[in-house]
Amino acid sequence: MVKIEDLKRINMLSQVPGHLLEIISNEAQLNIYGAGTQLFTVGDTVDTFYMMIMGQVALKTTLTEDIDVILDNLQSGRSFGSSALFNGAVASYTAVCQEPCEVITLYGPRMLELFESNKELAYHLMTGVAGQYKRTMDKRARMIMKTLDERPDLKLGIRDISELTPVY
Image (cartoon, rainbow, N blue to C red; front, side, top):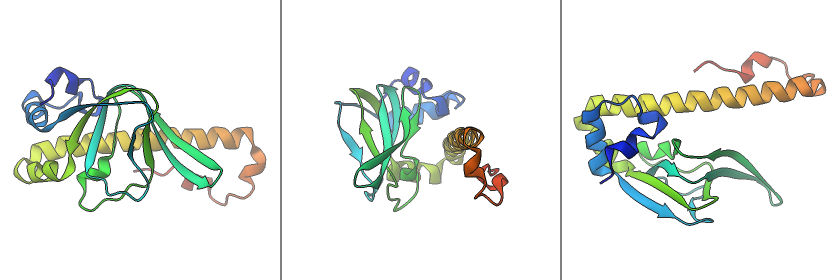
């Protein structure tokens, strides 16, 4: 069980009504991980949804044997592993604690069971996940556009630049 005050610190849960936070509170676990802990890696089955209370987690992928790309560095208030809210999901990135982390976790299959009986809960959690996804995509699109502004030579190979900033 996790305190409702801790759940309210999570960005995607900030607007969720109290009675739904109570349900989440009863299902959630509070975990502490050390620096260097790998929460999951590319190809792993994802069955846990993570919400950061304290610390930093890097989401990364390997481009080549010598090159890892950090997709994002998540800190308090952020969440990841939303694939756990879908059956049979597989990780497309690796999540590693960069420092000691305090993390709230939800077991995905149990949340799916709760979604079946409580559509309001499903609506609010999935709206939160969708909002977070949109903010992430908007941030990445801005980064791409900034890079292209700084490197006009890269624009030459792009036929339709509007495809880089899709509307979801």
